[in-house]
Image (cartoon, rainbow, N blue to C red; front, side, top):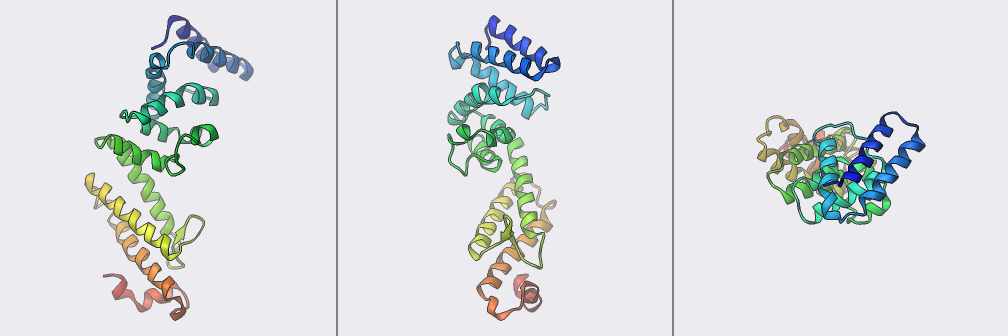
Length: 231
């Protein structure tokens, strides 16, 4: 963990963070970080991961400023991520806004990994018993699925635009992954309507797009194919 000198500098920074002007806060933080990196990473990485755990899981009101994230918290979590240490990917996911604001940090991941969703998927891959990550992942995917469906019967969204046939297929695959996660938590009843709507419209909208010369719009497709789409 921290040496006596590092601990005193950390305490001085905490005091400055609570009451000092911004410039003084940053000077105190830099002094602490300069002292921190004089020790081998293995000695202070557990401290940095504990800070992330307290903030993400415990809701502790610790301000993780950009220098603290880039120089201490991120290196410790990245090492934990590569070592598949339980919690590391989840804490990175909880700090995804800081990760988004640090291009040099994001470059250490594949693009699809450096998102809250990608990190939560990694978290349950590293530790299948990580229920916190699974519940958060279910919540995030549910929001994405609801968003994609919220303009029905005008159509299905993929990002800001209407979905293509290929993107409807991607949404169907995401829905099936969502169903597996929901089943693990025995939450099928809670999400039954969302799952029903996704199965109906992702397949139906894809079929509509592939045959759109036959219909004025998706609403007409639904009215003419209600029984088939509902199967």
